[in-house]
Length: 188
Image 1 (cartoon, rainbow, N blue to C red):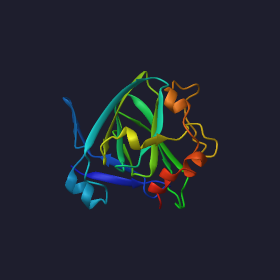
Image 2: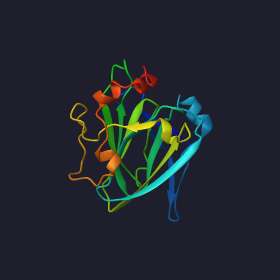
Image 3: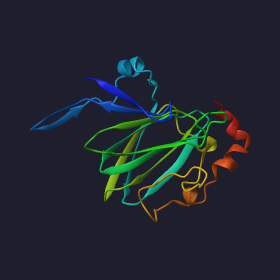
Image 4: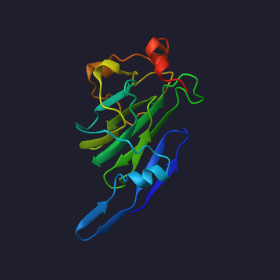
């Protein structure tokens, strides 16, 4: 089955569109194929698969990790969510720029953002499940986040009054992150 890649306004953020076979029994799709990812210039070294479920209006993010560096291929396997990636790489021409897209279990579209991007999502349906393949194993010692509502970034979230974890509610701004020594792990 064929995978297609759509470019976004941020060069390193890609939309991966899998071919889907559907009939009266249901559907089948190949979410990841190492050979095709390699041909398309996408990473093919995923090491961890994460799966989360959240109720409507939950907003998770914006999270990132520098050691080991972690890219993410995100998809909505149930329901509908707005997936977001923000460039946090020093010296990048798109530093502070964001990309967002509504994805759901019907379109089966995936969003890839490499290490150096903060990622997050908000749930638009009554319940949604998000799965993401990562290029690095999780490490709580080398992770951080950017405030979801940082006015310097200006993400246009499609919900009001999100349900947040304390760590997301109290996350730093992009400007604060860029003043930290750890931010030198993401230089364009």
